[in-house]
Image (cartoon, rainbow, N blue to C red; front, side):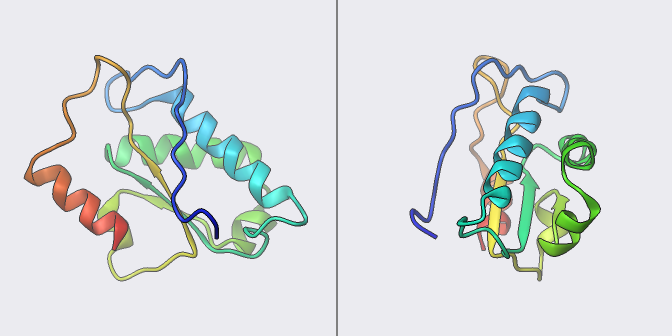
Length: 123
């Protein structure tokens, strides 16, 4: 896939507790649009969605996916949603990261805990 890394600024997202609904909806809408295009490189790709904020965002993402994607699409793309530990020993062609952040409402995602999460998510 080219480019190998794409960042998307989600406008209007607000972190409430450990979730960001606007971010989840934007991520799911992006994925649905990408896999629906006949010429998309994601047409047959397996997909993982990693929530760096924890299982609460992963649950929200799963519920949003079920609202938008069909069972056939979920199966074809072998969609897995979870926190970084859910992906240890697993591979996906495409990985989407949910940062669960919003301006002024998220601690700096630095330090040993986040370093480990990034390492697991990206390896």
